[in-house]
Length: 188
Ligand code: PNS
Image (cartoon, rainbow, N blue to C red; front, side):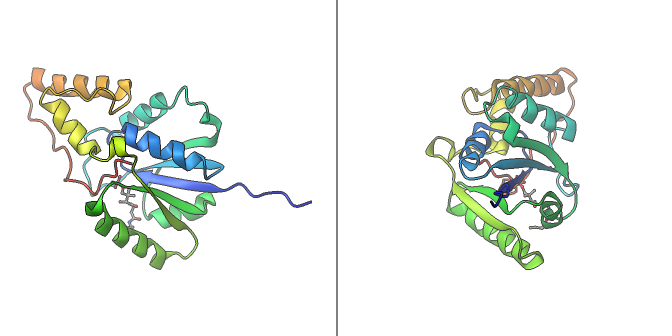
């Protein structure tokens, strides 16, 4: 009798911070894969708004009561994504596509990853209609100007964003960069 091999996908990103779009994509990925590894890129080329520890904490708190938590792993990685994927034994890289504007960057990344390694397939899911217009960067921008992002990010993320921007204002220090206008930021 053959034993079925576990199908693992790596869901990589900056998650700066995690949004409900990311969570939606994760849920849909869990319908396809046995296990999903959320892989937080510690990308030194991109100065994140939240530290690695803060981003990890926001992800794990957001998922704390997830019914499929036993099938979700949260890790960080450095270096090439394909090398990390190889180490995990995953068969796929999971990404979301919001709009045509995402396509070029994603196409370039998928083809480069494929050139580097033939093993993992990159699987794209179209972002759910509710999340098509959100990105981590636009969420940060709205909160930085006092806008409401309720329902677009987990409550813990909304609270942490408000705290962080308030602390910048109180200390009267310049607001940090919110990150490039993504597609170096996949909302889902
Ligand atoms: O959420 P993001 O910022 O769109 O995620 C981009 C990420 C982290 C998936 C991408 O930058 C990446 O894979 N970085 C690791 C370095 C790498 O492997 N680069 C070559 C592939 S383009």
